[in-house]
Image (cartoon, rainbow, N blue to C red; front, side):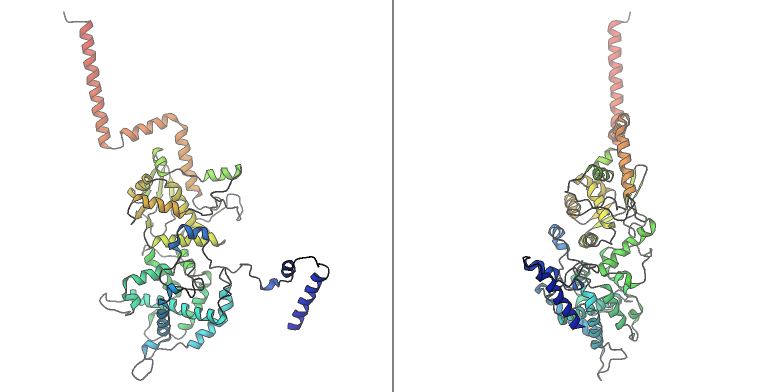
Length: 495
């Protein structure tokens, strides 16, 4: 077989060299390239963040504590965590449960050789998931990275479940530096949500299946799915309503990595509520860049999705309300009806900012990811143009932020959507935006209505303005009456 392949390549080279002497060598090399070995990106699920997004908010994409996967492999900034990975590997293998006689106290030991053999078999499929080949990482080093990082993630999820389900707060169920150091656990939750810090979910699932194939005695965590462990671990980053059940597909093959799984937990409700439909009737539509020149047809589409700022819409009489019902479980449930726009609360803090940025980055990189988060924050970007806009949203409860000022919130929202490719035809908020625009246009199409609503807004918006108007009216009437009687007495003096 090897001889036939070699013969074919030599015939191919001979064919291009004989009658094509004047062609440059690079042309000949391309013609002789074996296309079977080329990576056409069909299996990519884990991407490097585009440079334009990275420059806008670099801190949201660069891990602070730990490196998982090949993107930051051997980075000296994460060298300290390598010892923690090794320690967690030993914990997963069961070396922490030896008794005085050297036995494992009834715990079934997972053999390291079995893990290595499993990872060797998954190396090719794992490499194909990344948007880069990483030819500088040898096969042996890549498998070692898979073993160390995969075991660390699995053991961390298992220990976190044990940590959260302890019966007593005083009881230190998990006596480990990662759990006893207050800042470290939250830092790990943020780092493991970053798009460049991912392992394929099938790798983690196969490793978890191997670890739990012989359940340890008295260890309830081995009976819990990896999907549930993952959602429980990342829930503090953006808490959901505990009374609401997240409907997710139990099949692990449906999920690409931890970031993809956690994102799915937010979009499951909107996917059941209403499917996205392209306005053109096609599932493949042309993206619109913020800075590119648009033709008239594209401009009309863009205008149909344009929304004025909160201040401008308020002047037109549109009201903003917090949609409190199920807002924690369905952050996309934006509702418009009869001049009232209801938006679920948006929480902005040190945890949600990098989370939202990585959700958006994933949607920008993966063609199969419907841009729910991108559309949602594009709506906020268009509503917020100034500090006054943030003040209104903050006062109505739509925005909850730990940032120091409204200006910081406005800068963040506008910065979040910078350099984003936005598709106007693939938006789940099309109906709501159309309703707002129709209301705005109808308001300014009737000048008498505009004058009347401005009168109501300026003089009848509060009891104090009503009292002031009433006092001014009474004073005006008394002045007019006094003037009338003075003139009347002058022209018709009493006899």
